[in-house]
Image 1 (tube, chains in turn green, purple):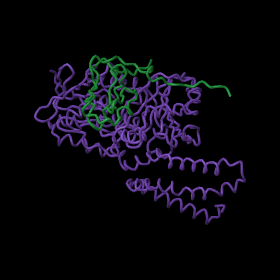
Image 2 (cartoon, each protein chain N blue to C red; image 1 turned 180 degrees about the horizontal axis):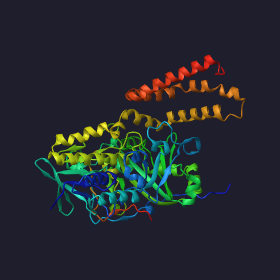
Image 3 (cartoon, each protein chain N blue to C red; image 1 turned 90 degrees about the horizontal axis):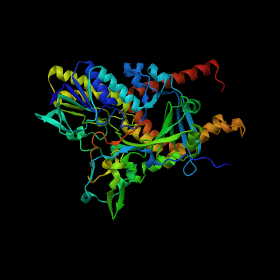
Image 4 (tube, rainbow over the protein chains, first blue to last red; image 1 turned 180 degrees about the vertical axis):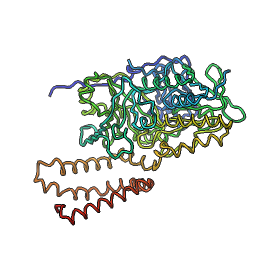
Length: 95
Length: 465
């Protein structure tokens, strides 16, 4: 049987974000208990676990889809979520 | 600082329908939207139920380039990973027993929010509502203990005796008003979507009107495929593993589960046949409540759509709910203005009417509906039910390998062997039945009718056994 072409998805190349000029996710490291919910749920892998605590990638403003999953999954109130200012952030646009 | 009769925060389907209804009723209405154009921030494709055509006459005129009618729903049940091949498929057209004509004609229409949201906003504007884009609401203005307006980022203020919060699942309006802190992990789902473009001719040939398809299987969360004119999107995990509480309890990464389903051979074959190209990766959260939320209004404020937690308990369908609640909230706003009463007590009539409306009815037996769906997420139950469906289908309809009568005679032993799986279904289904009194009456009536038919046929000698 011939090898069939596999349709793969590189999610990072499939998002269009105009980076926000200011922060819109605020992380209180001292409240984090290292449960890892944010790292598990984030569809863009923007949270990493380091030394038993979560950390948010510095470049999140270039990739965040503003879904709020991390904020909703955190049970320790360590993550606060706003929105990027008008005119920035993710754009879902029919090319 | 400008004054209005009504401020609507968020120009999604709920907000725009509220603004349209209010403007048509003569209210001076301001519609605020944080994005650069309506629909910009929303995951692009969705399926709108025929309910919307029943309830909103303005949809009769809607012609959007992305629209594709769904007159066939397909459920694919796959074998467990890593094989993930099709074991059982159910496909069905609309039922003649549906209670209104649109539902007897089609299930849903797939289309893009990029087109639908602007369509609704334009109707609202034509009716006289004032739209302001690029307007992120960051605070509420309070007066005498009730909401009296909103504040934009940058400090600009707008005043109105009534505000409608239509700002989605993360509703800042709800939080600012103190109606909730945030949704709990068992009240929300996190859904990822891969959106594909496909040539229209391929879509017409391969998908045609099978516009809503779902992939289930033991150990899978259930993924859904929605088709529009020139593309499809595959999203999920559906409403089983995507529930945030369940995902974190079981350590399931929604994004990873979606990509696994994407790599399943039947999905790959479909995408190849469609000549589909990945276009966009999307993610969003939805509320998924098993009962109607309580805190949806306070003095001078009503919440609609996802901000109110109205997506229904089985599939978390939410656009029709947003539109319906938006219209209802605008009607209550009009009455409040006529009466000059913006108190929490008056706004409470919105919650009461919502509960009695078709939106509220969707929450009847919500806990059981949720359980029914979650059972498909249990690998053991799902595998048993799947193999039982295969056994029944093969022995009843597709038996060419063995003597026909012998194969068909096995039906009862197949059912008997599956008593445990059927019992677990019945444990959820029977309490559900008891909560829907009307359906219960119909059930007994059809049972009696069936027995009468059997007796009559038997007496007249028409029944061949």
